[in-house]
Image (cartoon, rainbow, N blue to C red):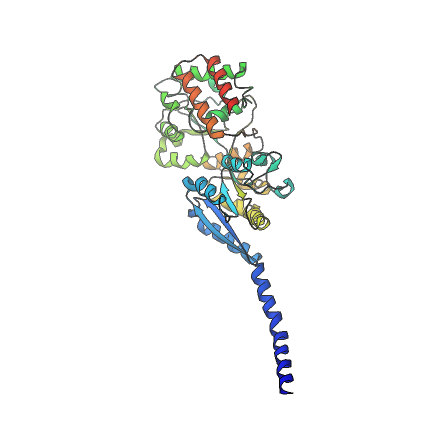
Length: 398
């Protein structure tokens, strides 16, 4: 009898304890950790940690593990992590490198409907093989600064610029021909963006104009080797009439060259014959090996919602890619004497009329090719149609 009572008590204990054990296991199984990498955004730690905290409060079963990676190491670390079985779930990258990963089938892809909160034109940057491989984060779109003490002409396009002159020891502008994809972006504004279009009559004419600028000292000879930072220095020194640059450099001019700042006016970015504007973009991708892609996407969409995008844009001179955030009055009105606000409004407006981006394989190699051939034309005086024919052949090989 005692033995029977003992067995009954054991069974009762199991019945009482088992539900709690199962519930505990179920809770543990439900907890999801999303590893989230950003590129050199540590100075915005309060902003990012607050977003994470609010998201975790609303999603009790999700934990966000945030790691900020130095910008210079972002690509290397991402590539190394993808080769392992435990890469980050959500990564902040550039579209060019993201495209490279998408071409290698290393990224999770999305239906367009899931990205409905973003500007449609921006989304085209993150499309490959009719699939979307990234979530937009933020954008920038350059504006044109001009020194009103040196000129009052307001060119709309590079064609307008080519008709102008410079004197009194100044230059018209400085185009960083060999820096990254600067030249390719200008060509793209003229829809010169393929091997078939690089050696056309229109392309030859455009390169001829570059040659005139260079030979007639309308741009500094260093344009072929120096960077946008050097161009900014020359503008601050009062040596350039015009400078196409990011709005983020306006405060630098204000602090380091107050007289030039006082004479600076802002007009829209110079266009090509398309009349459209280019832009730069940062984005998020979800690695193909992510164990929780749906959770990662949900957090990415929360991170880039209207409220969070607007707050970020007020902290730093970037443009939101969220449609609703861009409609905010912050991007509609400005005081007349506030150059940064004027630049913000102009660049935000430009996002409504964007030139489709140049999305090609082997972008870095193409940048190298363009730098090589512009140098041959400007420095070595190679005949333009011969140089562009060789450019076409090499581009086709890529």
